Length: 289
Length: 289
Image 1 (cartoon, rainbow over the protein chains, first blue to last red):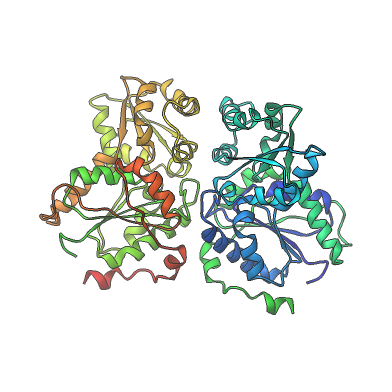
Image 2 (cartoon, rainbow over the protein chains, first blue to last red):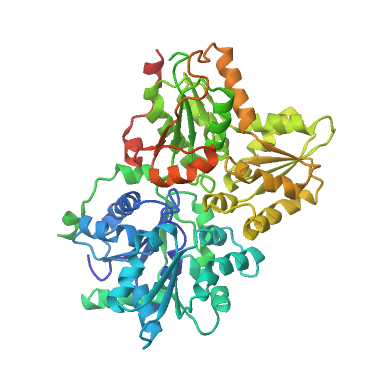
């Protein structure tokens, strides 16, 4: 692999496109390949073993592209599968979205001795305690409030606007118990949630810092690539074309995806789940040598 | 296979248990095997090709049990995969939930010349037009109102009660446009929805008949088995123990499943998706001979 190799971004579906948007802004010269596992989404109600298998299959499938970095742009997949993915592909540079999110939350908490940091996320991410561990490593006194918000992904995928009374009611129901306990920082622990960031910020009010880890995540990838001399010098500087793969319904993905990416997108290429099961795991060493 | 062979009921997850409940009431002597594809649920936002592959894999996996009947207890899977499943396993008796639901709707519509029949269902079921076709075959003048209601499954899986203001708001939002057009009959076109049947009936009012196809479906299976002399004579007459298989998180399934089944349930057996992909398709002819 070389500085001209692509960055692979993977997610269960659409949410990771919010991270791609930040990556494209931070690293406009990079070639990005996105993989959305739309045949098997959502990951947020599934177990670690199942999600780790899915993630390893995807990385194995894309390893023929010789990616210089793999970003797991899904909080559930990061929480449940990042260590397993690193163990399975020791020669690949792989990162997730939770460490950057935790770092941003601690910075936002400022100097307060016992900041109250809330996280809304999927059922699986909350259960994994990954955010709790990542934040406590940096600020052991932080008081953590974790709350699963399982309706937010389907609400966003249904295309409801922030003015919809049901969107407002769901957000108030999920956020009120956190606000009642003196929240200082709220982490959006799912890459879908930035779509509703403005409404969430309005509900929690000016005294609460709302953290969407996408930008921090893009900075983290830039730092990792810079450290090993792998940033791409060429490129047109305004963003390369995004290449996308999905495991089901490319048309639906393209239709809904533009809301996440902020611009119109081309129809992605279909990779059926059968192809993922057919691929041998993992051919990485041979490629890296 | 013989009258003592089991009936296989399959679904993407939990919803089909509402049909099992009706089957157990109608056919208490029968042995029922249930399969919930919890690693790949929901099916309702996925394409016909993907869902048909999933359904054929499950039937192939369970064909070693020599089932005397396979019931696809999921509206999306019936709409998208029933013909493909019948074609792949020509020696198996396979039925779905849409024909019984359509029949019940037409009976409920009574003698009215142009009854207005509404259907709420998943995005995929609505798009397939399967209900429209099944009802129009029986009553060509029926006026059909089809409405996807994608939030209802996650709302029910979150365990929210019918008194929750968000449940009431979501139901009103989905049902109001149908009620405004003079609804006579409302079909619950997803096996999850019977959990909210009382609240749905309260919202649409006494003049609208609400059809939950579970009972009609159980009658349909009884009729099919009776016609070929395959009803089981033995048994204790109070219901055999249900055997369940799932592709992910057996504990979560058992915890949530009792609400659908109406009684406590044992933890199901895990079948990983890898096993489904490993099984050759389809060994049915050899078994039937």
